[in-house]
Amino acid sequence: MNHHFHAAAIWIAITLAGNALAGEVRTNWVTSWYAASQPGWDSTFVLPMNVPAFLEDETVREYVRISAGGDRIKLVFTNRYGKVPLDIGAVSVMTRAVTFEGMRHVMIPPGTTVTSDPITLPVKPLALLQVTTYLPRRTAITGFHWGASQRISVAAGNARQAADFLKAARVEGRLFLSAVLVDALPGGRTVVALGDSITDGNGSTPDADQRWPDFLARRLAPHGIAVANAGISGARLLKDGMGDSALARFDHDVLGQPGVADVIVLLGINDIGWPGSPFALAEPMVTPDELTAGFRQLALVAQARGIRITVGTLPPFEGALEGTPFAGHYSPQKEALRMRLNDWIRGAGIFDAVVDFDAVLRDPARPQRMQAAFDSGDHLHPGDAGCRRMADAIDIGAIVARDPGARREAASARTERAGRISPCRRCVRPDPA
Image 1 (cartoon, helix red, strand yellow):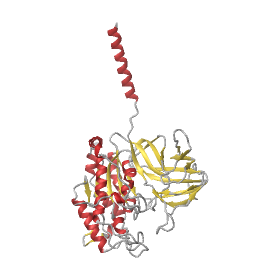
Image 2 (spheres, rainbow, N blue to C red):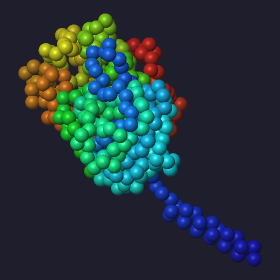
Image 3 (tube, rainbow, N blue to C red):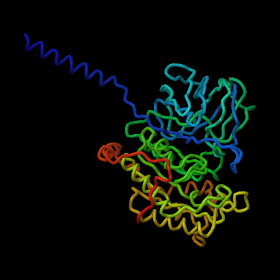
Image 4 (cartoon, rainbow, N blue to C red):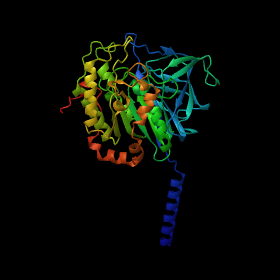
């Protein structure tokens, strides 16, 4: 009898385990859309914030173009640079109510983010989502995402159910919505584009999804791979600019993204161009050793976490911002530093890949200047055609072919080497090479 009892018990255990596995909800959350948050600034800075100083009893409506699709989504809201709790009264996406731990209302403490409950909403790759957020209380704008490449609408009162926002004010940039996550197919993952205004889309057609990460997203969408744009206008590698330095924000904007497997870095032109310009009049020129040390640090931390890192060469910028109040961005001395850094990026041998944006954008007859067909007109930012050219230069074969499990194995093998990036520029050691 004992024999039959044990056999029956084993059969029941196996059956229950099989049923549990069959009913298990498989998840693969990845960042499908992203807007990097940055702290606000006061009127002493050379550029205005271009957003209201505060919102009160107002509704924000924004449209976001996701990259990878899936059967469910989550929304991420940030109060990363807030001084007081952020009160969100209600949120909807494509007319569906959004909840946070079952509640329609959520309070986000200063310095934190909140992620919504999963929303059953099948979305196709490259779908356009409408997100509407009601802010009932007076809310100071101390953190946001700057830029005219994406704009939002702000209407008075609780207009969450309004079919249109024809009478709403148009505002440049983003406010509190920072990410859309999708429950992607197995093997789905995210490529983060970490950069400055060239990545963020200055110079491309506003509200038309013509930035180079948008074109890259279109190339990767058939493979189920998402692209998260972590570009911030005015961003720098080593020092804070219009946002934290890349060394400071790498942990949050790259390592913190669900499903991240690759990062493509295009940074340094503001480190070179800002000193001596209206953006940083009294700041001394950055040195080659400082720049290469910063890139080495990014490579070390990315690879220690099993993330494949691609670094782009800096595009040509002769004549950048000439005839504007921001002239001084370019000089022959700065051009020499750009060329030296590009040569180092091409030959350093420490990155998983290099994409030569300089080579594909420069004018063959005048290589220090961007080719006219790719120039937005300010000689610093590529236009739509230039952004497409940049995306086409990226080898997606290596991104697509990569085994998603490889990053986990690599991260495990490098656990002892993994570390955090210091936000302090003084902690960056000069490159001994």
